[in-house]
Length: 214
Length: 214
DNA sequence: GTCTATATGAGGATAGAC
DNA sequence: GTCTATCCTCATATAGAC
Image 1 (spheres, rainbow over the protein chains, first blue to last red):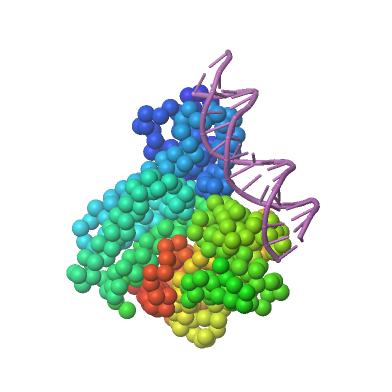
Image 2: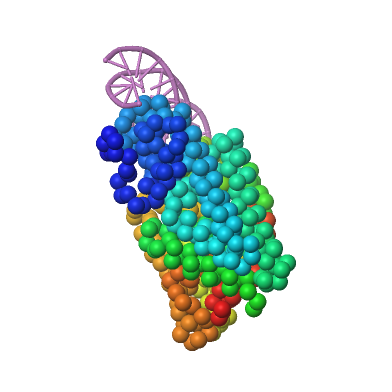
């Protein structure tokens, strides 16, 4: 348990401490953020449906009833994680692309940063990519919209690189999906066992070769 | 509903018809196989925990009680899908590697066939990769063992290609994971919207470039 | 905002007749 | 092997006191 005035999460330095800051400015009470962080840990570890409201409450030494002062339902909790997670992910992607105006460095930066993001925020990333279909229809819509943007951003870099003759790409759609797969699948296997930046660097090299002439 | 003597599944030609044959020689009754196929469709669509035994029974026009003549529990059903799915996946991988004795063609075949396998059997593949941690400890063990084999097979081809000077690989472990990611992530996004063989062919080209000199 | 207590229903699994 | 009926647990969510 955290004590009053102590807003650190056990295991500071890991991804939960990182994502904590995402909600730092939110109007929600600190206790709300603890509920959120506990949910992230559990949803990522067991999955949304396998996590009960009791699991979350127990982890915080709280009653289930108390949780409902912060969130109206378990699904609303998933929505908060999922939407914010998606938004932060595209933010990272866009920042990487904006770091240059040439397709080559853009592709390298994009894969490097997006891969590192998935390693660094692997718990949220797992929820973002594998639990989203547990959202209600209304909550799913804005999330899917962000996902379309994500793929479009990657495809755009590829298409511009191909048009400029920098890249050799026979199929933008398939290559774009493959690049996204590379980054996203990190959320499936990553367990803190590799340095996010080194991993991103290595994947950026792979990506550049994927679009280089045979 | 299927009628007596009719062992086809609605939507023949899709992956459910394909996997049906995996259990053709099993000592189980045809009705057992229908329970299994319905479970595959539902586990893949909604996830294991979101699927109820009533969902499965309803889909077959059967009572929940009747299902228990075929499987002792929902988890046993998951285990059957998951273990057989894993076995068939390595089978495909090993066959691809055995198609040549040179690392270059082996890598191409491996990525081509493993990618195509994931597209062709996307429902089972989704369960194999995303629902396995819902297995009981006892059932999880043999499955994890197969997964280690899978990665080892890929890494071995990479290592031999690197040793022979055919490939330029700075990091076998990271590149091996990236190659597996490429194939596996197909299970996440694929919805029958691309030709499995063409997709595999394209991915094989990407893979070869990933290990080619910069 | 947190507690205890509880309403309400869903879900996995079994019993026993046919 | 299938049905109907049912057991029993557990899960989400709410009510009302402090």
